[in-house]
Amino acid sequence: MTPSLHIHTLSREEILTHVDALADILENCVNGGASVSFMLPYSHEKARAFWLNIAESAGRQERTVLACRDERGEIIGTVQLITDQPENQPHRADVAKLLVHDKARRKGAAMALMEALEAQARRQGKSVLVLDTSTGSGAEVFYQRAGWQKVGEIPRYALMPDGEMTATSVFYKFL
Ligand SMILES: CC(C)(COP(=O)(O)OP(=O)(O)OC[C@H]1O[C@@H](n2cnc3c(N)ncnc32)[C@H](O)[C@@H]1OP(=O)(O)O)[C@@H](O)C(=O)NCCC(=O)NCCS
Image 1: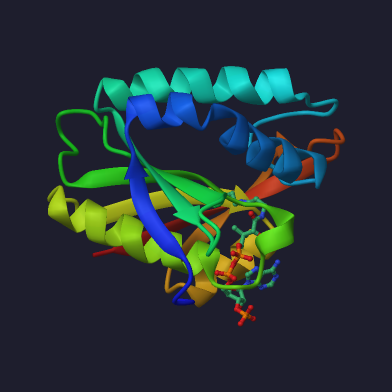
Image 2: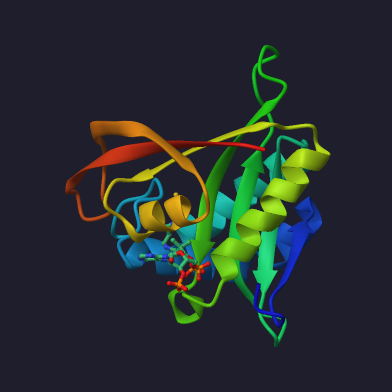
């Protein structure tokens, strides 16, 4: 990891405090074409509303939200570990919303976030992580580089922000 990057967990209160910074990152990713649940046009208000819901979910201990700060202390990336699972999957968690602002990419932020997320998952007794991402995206290459196992692709799974249909690639990682 780049020594100047710092990863830490955001509490409900910290998500609320930094909601605009987090919304900026989400807005930047969606407007940059990332397939992360949302369609264009995408506004700062919609991104804020998303994070306000996530803050409450974190407050209910359903998920852990991690942030990556740069050398100036600015939040430039984030990822979530969703631990609220059915009672027959106590050992499993989902990974969602790995987002790095485009001004801070290719400097190891996502890798640092995923390493910290895996450590957090282990501490919570999780041994199987699952995620999906748009087939053919940079994120798909990233996950393979980060040691995730690709299960396969589901065609016509979702829409890109501009409305184009995309397949999704399903990944897992054993810890
Ligand atoms: C995918 C994403 C999180 C990667 O973040 P990042 O901080 O730039 O990634 P890192 O710097 O840690 O990359 C580590 C390695 O992964 C690979 N990688 C990362 N982004 C890549 C891309 N766009 N294309 C190809 N390989 C990529 C490279 O091997 C890279 O190492 P290198 O820079 O030395 O070549 C970022 O591009 C992003 O936020 N995209 C938009 C949102 C998104 O699609 N999120 C995934 C939702 S499931």
